[in-house]
Image 1: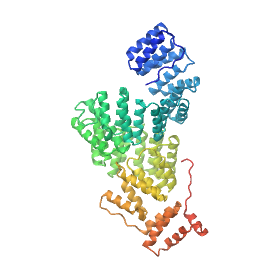
Image 2: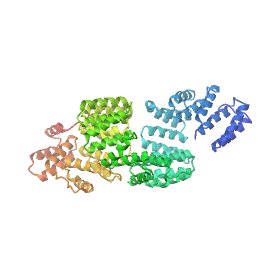
Image 3: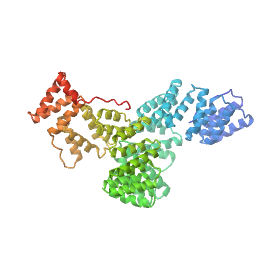
Image 4: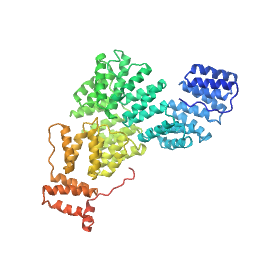
Length: 623
């Protein structure tokens, strides 16, 4: 609920009693009864501060924001040295996403009362909604906590800003503090549930949502719970919470097959929900595969009810692509493209499907068609550049990447795609510069952090920088592939206990990505592996289940492991590998010499030899 008007100038009796009665009715959502009372007071006394300020507040509550802003401007005109009118107008404008108009109003409120808690909170939220001003938002939210520490909304505001900064764990802690102060506030409970879901904390999220619904929140709060669950994949442990929310709003539970019948509008809504489920269950969280299986069932039921339903056909094509059924994807996509119903995502999926099918000429042609269809899309230009790079058409690929960068307009994800084109062209310095530019504007951008880390590992052989970058990623690793890459990096750095734990965590991921286990196998076999990693490799080969045995351990592979660990100063790990080489070949001269050097590194000649191999940390200041 919006904050009610402050007390302002002293009220007038008996009109003040009428205003207080109207405020009490508004708090009960009885706006139709409250509004006439306030208007009668104003008819008798147009200068009544409490009546006018609370009328603006009531109109705000009733989602009549245009009227609320107009009324708040009357408050400003009559009491220009009071924060109320500025605050109310700015608050309404911000919720209508009009931050450009809200900013000067809340800034004026700050000039009038720089230490007023609600004004500080609103200013922080407005700043958080302006990308270039986002860095200023957290200090403002912290100031609100400092001046108004007993108000849960101060901590809620801090959490909102932290979410904008993608600092999910800190946001969770801030909401916990808000709930300590106001444990039955449904807004705090729902926001806490949202953040916990984002962190993959299913059980605590369930508790927060259930507690909020038991408190019978307003319909828009219930809708917020349903929207959150839909966009997070309708995880099986929370299905009953979703059903409770649907019952509270008296709407059908469209998360279940058949509930839409043949009603076309309900089918379209069900397709929207299913699409949201699929995207979330595939990419965002470690639910079981249950959500994905339910999506497949939902799509089949929708298409059985209406085979022409475009949103369901689009989802069926997306599922085929994610399932690596590329022939099915192309067959589903072609009629949608011919009908002019294809989205940018469908073009991208189909282009990549054609690439997987080794139909590169068709992929380049379709990417060019996507670019004509979406001429202002940076992603379409990047996709075309990527296919041109694969086709060896270097100059055209560079031109496409440059065009994509111009069209990106600062969008971090679009710019990440541009950097990917440079990587495919072997332009690692240009790719590095592009990733760093993204991270200067969005320091916690997940994809940019991972891709730049991967570039440092593979392109520059700088595993220390790669580790630092990937460690900065806050979002949970759903498929385990990112954790597996971190394990490979730490293996090469000689952090073998951490590497082993990373590999185990990656293997145990419930929605393990198809590339996770093969990636671990390839990485370990490249270096032998050393004996302590052999059981892990054998288990990965068994999980892969294709009947192909692990490659034999060779001295050459172990040599690479020894030199790599020496490069990063991991002498105990290098010593362990050298002992294994000498067990395989007791007369191996190089291993004998290296083992002597590693066993006594303080001997001047040994230290000199180790210094030749050792790679110092470059400590890139921009990371």
